[in-house]
Length: 375
Image (cartoon, rainbow, N blue to C red; front, side, top):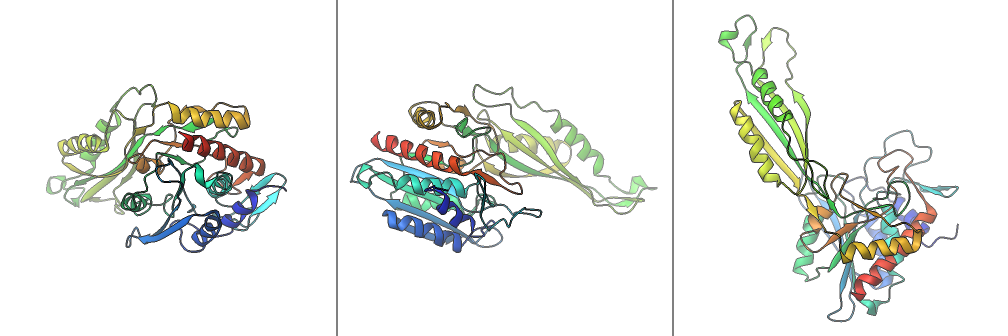
């Protein structure tokens, strides 16, 4: 199959890189970027339990004072699981489809980025790649560490495009101009264990926990905004761990997850949950994964939409749906938009991408990069 992107994607997929990715897959990407004139910086960040994590920042500098356009993404993948038709890290083309873990999320997009920049003259401006090995995992020592390096190196892009698989039914039907924030909260009620026949000598924590969860479950956080769906709070776990039928337990715990729009901050929601937990004699321990953000429709989104329409005939819908991505960190640097392949098979067995989509995506990325650097 005559494709500029296919061999690049196959080489990346052939490198097993279950999160946190390290070593071979970064060797492969570096080998693809250096011949194109990129300076490549690789670093390992963090300690156990969430590290070490390998990351890569590559930059091809244009003329002094020129604009800087950044591509961003990740080379780590989720575990492939069982039941694949072919080996998940042995890329295989069947018909027009390339199969392999990461074909869609998101080694295929990174390969398209590499092919795209080969078509952009170096004197057009500065281009960079911000690539982490820990987007699918805790994401504590991934893009956050890369941002610190970018600031120290005075290499902040004017615009960043993240290659997450945003398309739904056809390549080009959707781009993401924002994402909801995410906070997970662990709840705990301490009681006093005892025999069920002597409740006056014990303190059952389950009742207060149930009442707490009922109040939290009844919360209506908002009705949504022009660009965001309503925030939602979901109870994701309840644990007592009591194997005995005649014992009042000493402790009961639960966990909830809130996906929230830009009417809230993670800390404000954590404080609200903590107040309700305290009212019922419990405690709340939050972990804020990211804040909501929005890149309002404007010149950048129009630039991407024009490029997509020129190659596919579609004008992508601007959306904020779905889960989080590393755009939640990069948005602190400059405007960020996500656009990439069709997401129907991501994280599934027999993950696959249409090879013609890879080449179309590369052409779209080339158009976007040229337009972004032209200002």
